[in-house]
Image (tube, rainbow, N blue to C red; front, side, top):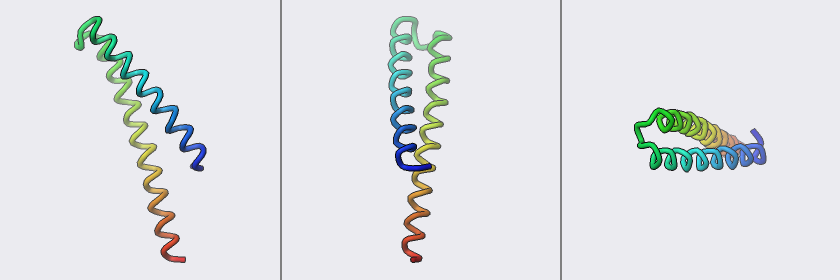
Amino acid sequence: MKAAEWREAHNRICEEIEELRSEMVTLGIKFGFLHPDVQLCSKRLDQLLLQYYALVSISQQELQTAAALESVY
């Protein structure tokens, strides 16, 4: 993944996470945090967070690979 693509994906997912987090808090205040809509929102947020961690992990692996290659050459 190229740096520009990674930044775009990172920015997009961060925005989505913040929007969903805000929605979950709003729903939680309105209905209570055990309401099914809040729980569904929480599950969607968990999925986004897993995608974020995968994206960050890919980036770290690529950086480590590049550093290893640089030390060889």
